[in-house]
Image: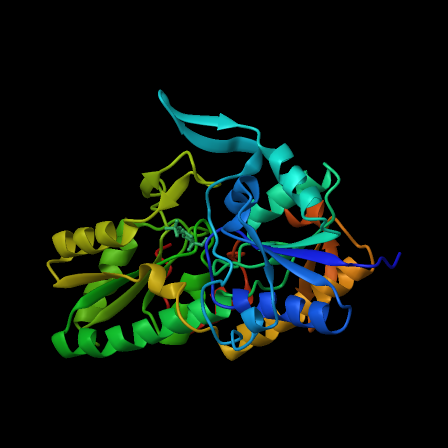
Length: 363
Ligand code: F6P
């Protein structure tokens, strides 16, 4: 059912990624130009929604930002309104502040909210729709771990950064006849490690979906040291040995996802050097993967997602998320979008192709 949108809110939640501004622009421009709506920016994700950090956006705010990384609205991976953390005298106190979000939504007279984020944001959005808010989600994350869309925007840009890093490590590894381990992000999914590893020509790729065996890796790099004389190992932050567990860098109860992974790269490098005596170095790519300009693909996908999210809102299709299926953007129900994490199927064509060109997955 078509509805008249007079005031539309936009929020970016969770970790940032390249392409967020392209989405904001493609919601705000047509909203201001074609449907004559006011565009209201929620600052710093749901934290800003609870605290009432909200302002109207003008055309000037969204001009010249398609190529800009980050988000002009700011974001936060803390502050789930349903479990809102506040510092108290006896540590962090968690309370349900979702009514404050609903109050702010009503106070600003919003007809709809477009929530741009990953699984955490979509979960919160789903719960807020149950409280009567009109929400359409837009899927972002460099990790590409949302099951209900073929791809999230931001992933392609991260892949490019990680691939270029591997290209650079190839030349120095080969010059010094070393083993170089590169740890990339991705949380519990191996999409970044697999994609960048294949594109960059990594010799070993370790992903969470295929637990690895230490001896297989030692043997593989040892053999390469007698031939090519160097090896590149691309490790996902969520990778783990067959008999081991994820390496956790930090736990923070204020975060929507309290666990921050990281550290497996150091462990892999240290074990290889210890067991094989081959000179080994490690690079942890970190937030370089999230920063900087979006790729052309992410700018285009972001523009399509934003426009289609506004269309969905104008049709009154709330409680949904836009999603890429093939070449088309469709809408899926939020409750379906949050059901499953999108992990690399160990029997996927890309894994098969990588194995065919000699990549070792440590299994
Ligand atoms: O979800 C995106 C992501 O970059 C993950 O790949 C990574 O594990 C996490 O966010 C890092 O979070 P933070 O920015 O809080 O360090």
